[in-house]
Amino acid sequence: MTATPATISPVRMLIGILGLDQHETGALVVSRAMMEAGIEVIYLGRFHTPESVARAAITEDADVVGISCHSWEFLDFVDDLVARLREAQVPLIIGGSVLTEGDARALKAKGVADVFGAGSSFDAMATRITEIGHQRRRAETGASR
Image 1 (tube, rainbow, N blue to C red):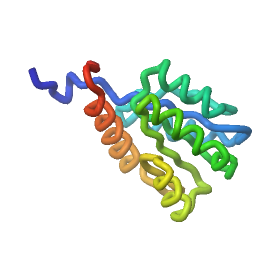
Image 2: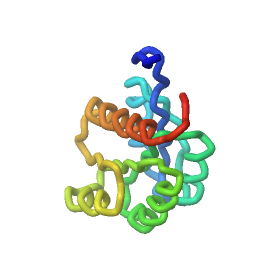
Image 3: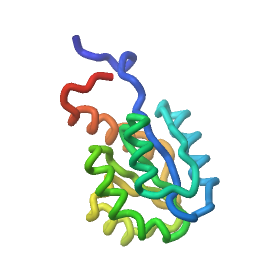
Image 4: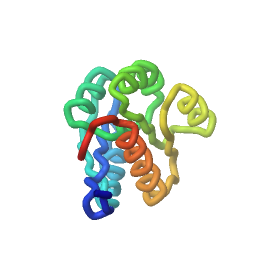
């Protein structure tokens, strides 16, 4: 039996903030916008390590992890987080106001699935996050949702 859009469960996205970055407003706004777009959001909050984000992604069965960054501290954590999420086969998305086009290229070269800087539209973000989440699901073998 082929699943119809009405029977496919929503993409599950974990959103969090790494390190001591205290800028939470953007993460909260994006969380709400993604929920309104039909994405199931698990909001992890601030002050996390790559280990705690990866553990939560596995525990929550997240299809994708989004990291909100509004300081450059996240750069110290990206390699570790990408490696931990790669083990769990969970794609990583990074967004925030401090991201430049150069940052986006460097992050994608490290294995980040996509990057959204200031001015990204919520519709484009939701579409891309849903695509990435569904790609992960298709890559899973033997999993059903």
